[in-house]
Length: 584
Image (cartoon, rainbow, N blue to C red; front, side):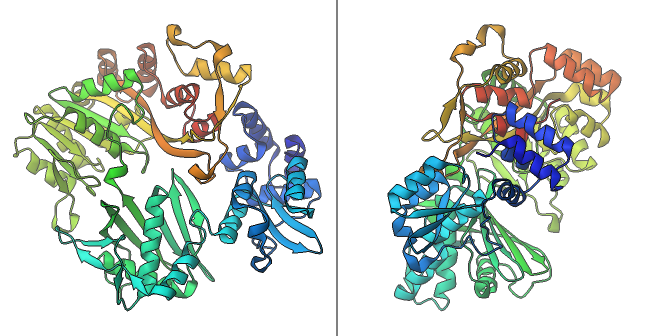
């Protein structure tokens, strides 16, 4: 790749980076063994398009982009037959045009002379290189070859014109709309729309997508899938079909198709390969139309085994020991989408027995588990977290799960339940585990009551796991390795021999859709509230510095340390851990 220091100077002189940002990005790229460009993007200093433009200027190689209309392959020249799709994806390049024996090629790394030689041998053409952004190249590959969901819209519409079939909704046992994606029924009036929605849903489940984003802009529509926490573009539906697609989703979700001014929320279910999958739908009006987000809740894809969700052995022992106590408070913190609910379900699934009465109040109930009495929040009729909790206390519960503590009333009701002999598990939105204490005190909980009832405070994040089929090894430099071992807080007896440690980086293959990652796993900081901590909470309230000092001395560790352990185990990368954690 181009000289990173020179590229940094080009970006500074162009005003794309400040000198301080340049130095920080260069330092991170050295520490995390990633490219300067990756570091700049991770730190949020500049976009991929800005970096690519600077690279073009530095190398003197023309820029190809969607905006300047160059990064649009000529589909009438048979370019997809000239260069195989696997080759294009593996080497992050796409053919653009063929003119007088010269092949225009967009590349992420146009300085790769060996790649240009391989393309020349493969095609017997003279190569004219262009530099382009990775995400835009992948989108162009999708459109040219129609693979990995790229040609989804075109294929669906073409097949529908030939067959005119579509899957129609049916009523499930619970009365919700359920669409059987494996069934084709003749005679739908809106066969194209129905088939396209079904194809999008089918493709999303196949690609392990967690959220589907369907958006409208001034002159185009957009379809994106969130896979392993990252949004990836898929081929967009025609702008003229956008309103009909939204109406179809509203019909499935039992929403008002005439209401386009206010947000609406609904649910429906699909059946695919004998799997029943729930979808939570949110529709929000924007200046160019309505934006639709469908969250896929696939119980079959959720692993509720506490041995496989990411706990280190000591963390697992501490969490389960607290969860087996007869009464007290357990709080798990983290941002939305960080896997808190899955962790709590896994713990409950482990400790549940017929001898105990389990009650949960959630908004929404994402996974239905046998043996738990699960209640859905319905604020429109007065069924709030606090109201349900008050009712639970008359239901002879042993263990109570509260989806989230949002207000003072809910916090105080949880505390009363814990003080009267119940185990209460819940979640909070804080940046780290110890901030739980501060947050609860802010919500009106007296420190002397909290010190006697809080059993455990935990925080979690999700890191992407390297694809086992294509991850590539490398030897970290001594400084990186020393930092990783030191900050992982490993016991002295279990520190591996540095000479034997190998780190891994992502590459990308067909099995992981060229992302280099496959799935996510949680990293945790788990703090058992020991007597010294109770004394600090009682005397000093939310003194985070004192609490963290006691926790570290007693052998507990923070999120980043948990992440470094995953790096040392070869499960993820340094840059992935750095992107989701902060140094305390």
